[in-house]
Amino acid sequence: MKLLVLINFVLLLFINCEKKSSATAIYNPGQGGAGNATIGCTNYDYGNWETSYYVLPYPVDISYTVNLSHCTSSYHAEGRPDQFGIDFDMPIGSLITATREGTVIHIEESGIDGGFPNNLVVVQQNDNTYAQYMHLTENGAIVSVGDVVEKGSHIGYSGSTGLAGYPHLHFIVTIESWEYPYVGIPYNFKNTEANPHSLQLGKSYTALPY
Ligand SMILES: [Zn+2]
Image 1 (cartoon, rainbow, N blue to C red):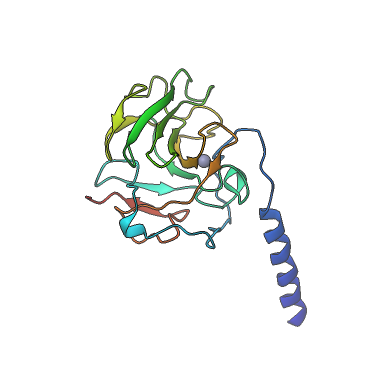
Image 2 (cartoon, rainbow, N blue to C red):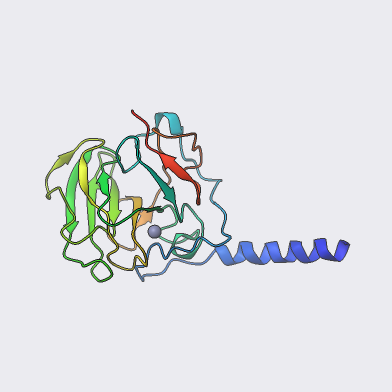
């Protein structure tokens, strides 16, 4: 019995070390397959979720399941540029809405689902941060560069472009720059159930009125 405990302890140490993989310049967010990963990075300050600047990136009354979340595995592992990225599992063509107000500064929408490049909309916010909506479908941007968006404004339609692997929205907030390899920051959402350390993988979240 004691030996078993010891083996488990050594295994745990090993897994924790594995999670600390260093950042890479290869862009490949969200490969799916959450596996047995658990949510991590609980030591970061996510702020008060009830007064968060952010609402979920889809319309009120809609629910989607989080596949990879903060500091889980693959490209969302701790220490990687996408460590604070969240993958929302949704069919191609799902409406994406703005999580927070800002100005659209970059759009790519020439990618074809299952192909490249990675389609995205980038919204610059008033504190030098950038909300990024990725893997959108071909010609899936509803906004144009220069547009000012409010919470809930229609941003585009989800897809499976870039290295998406399966249809989903990869959402991330970065600071200083939106270009990869960027620096992601923690955030949570005010219009759903309690999420003090942001959303958890494998859970479905309904967007509530705000
Ligand atoms: Zn992702």
